Length: 39
Image 1 (tube, one colour):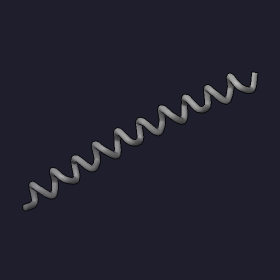
Image 2 (cartoon, rainbow, N blue to C red; image 1 turned 90 degrees about the vertical axis):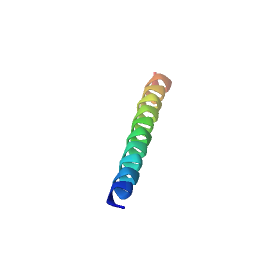
Image 3 (cartoon, rainbow, N blue to C red; image 1 turned 180 degrees about the horizontal axis):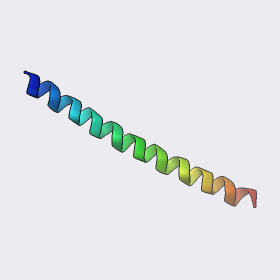
Image 4 (cartoon, rainbow, N blue to C red; image 1 turned 30 degrees about the horizontal axis):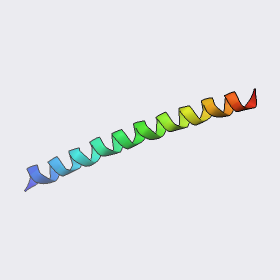
């Protein structure tokens, strides 16, 4: 039972990691877009 809970938490952590990286990527791209737009 504990192992299953642990595995689920690991999967959630990995998903959150991927989500965070995607958000970071979009934020950086958006910032670059704004800079390009400003000039």
